[in-house]
Amino acid sequence: MYPERIDNGQLYPGLDRLVEKGLITKRAKPSDKRREEYALTGQEKWTVNEYARFIQDIAD
Image (cartoon, rainbow, N blue to C red; front, side):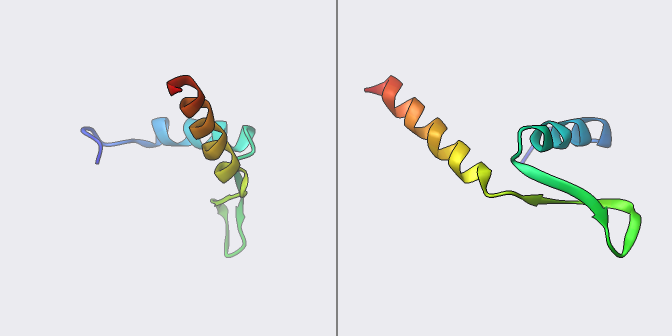
C-alpha cells in the first residue's frame, strides 16, 4: 500500500495529531498498561462528509 515502510517515528506523531483533532481516542490497554490502544470517535465520519461537501462545492 505504501512504497516505504512506516516506522514508529512516523506513525505515532500522526496518531497524536488525530487524537488532538478529536478523530480518535487513545488510552492505556486494560490488559497491559504499557501499551496504548486507539479507537474511532465517530467524528471522523462527519469530517470526511464535510470534506466531500467542500470538494463538491469547489467542483460545482
